Length: 448
Image (cartoon, rainbow, N blue to C red):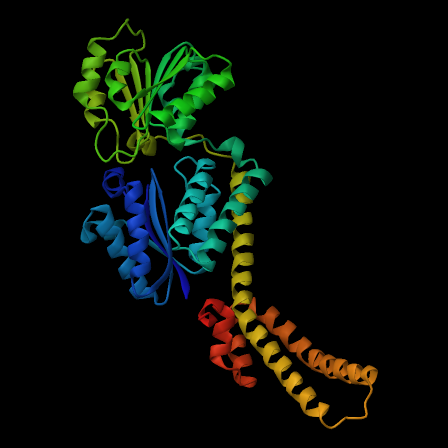
């Protein structure tokens, strides 16, 4: 089996296509279940964010795998296969590993170095584990990807260079101000949604010193938990409150800043709603209304940018903006980490393929030793217990010494490219039962 990734991102597709292809949370689960139901796929995981949709799989055949994964992405995204195909990219084996590790380090993000992608990778793995679509390969891959991302952020300065998408978006709104904190201080803010991105936005605005913060969410309890946490952090229970989603239009009329990021399939804030809110604003806004839409598909109608006094920043405009370039040395250092970790992961995976064969060989040797000792038992009646134990230990020691060098060496060789062939040679040389090797690889098969 081999690792394959098929996907599209802000680097390969226009935002208009990404927006239409975005997967709702429930659609991700169905995609995974359909993926592992496809003939060439043994494992699957989906990484879906505001600027990428990627399907990772352990496949038996490359071409069949690409065809099936592409078709599944088209079916579940709602974008026709012919339209979607030009924007898809494919990575296979070590290149697929390199891609995920680069993504985990923030090298492939819209804002280079941002760390939020690590949480999204963690969520992707959790969903695959929950649905039992991730086996040994994808569990190893994603867990290693998380470790590589954390290593890059701890060993290099890419954290200082990189920003979260939330911070980058707020900086675009605050253009002309010395900082987001200076721009946001004293403003009234509305955050629509209570997921990870919205929570980060709410926390950022609270720390920047907004005078009022309203959190609106379809599940009121989740918005209340977030508002309580922010109130505790700031030591002020009066500056923040939670409302159900039907209170969004009322809150909009009192806001200076709006950040929206929900999982809704349709538009949450229409042009008409924003126009109405601007018209009935509780007090004049010297700087107008600033709106940041981080949802994919969009939460805020694109027509909002035509309303006088309203500034709209969304994923499309962020894709066109240029973030401050991180230091080249930090990027190169992260790339070196990725290359090192890709090589280590590949070697570990190749070495793991030899283990069932080595275990099966040693098991067969132990069985031979046991049979020969049993045969000798009937012929050595006069041997006392001490001598019998010494003979038994000697026979086992001889077999262990004979097997030690070849098994250690074959494990070393298996870590190199093409190492799988050494396992085949070992099975052939020692005439190992293929079912015995398979039983070590998949012990569940032995259970009744």
